Image (cartoon, rainbow, N blue to C red; front, top):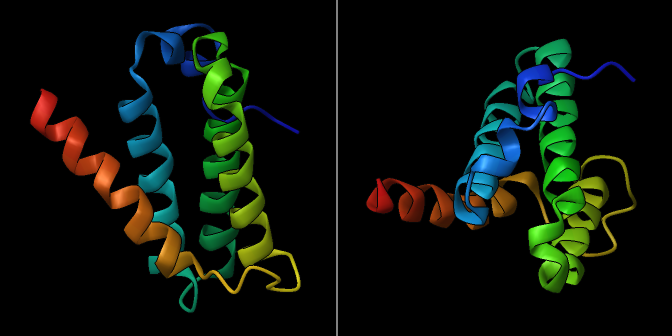
Length: 109
């Protein structure tokens, strides 16, 4: 798999707070929601970027105490997109979840 966010992968991601990281993941989820029924290619690219950013967050050692929550969020995204909807969560639900991080990140700036 090709890394989409090379600058972030090279260390920039670790300069962001957890709130900022999650807000960035959420922006990709929001893009996916927007493109879902409009352009399949752009939709799939947004999902791939969201999962990549979330993987960077999961790998960030600062959040080892939050690992269970982060991995569960990844599981919910994958279930909403690829799974059998076991959690009955949609991308729109996840968009709402991530929106709170965007608000919090904006307040802190």
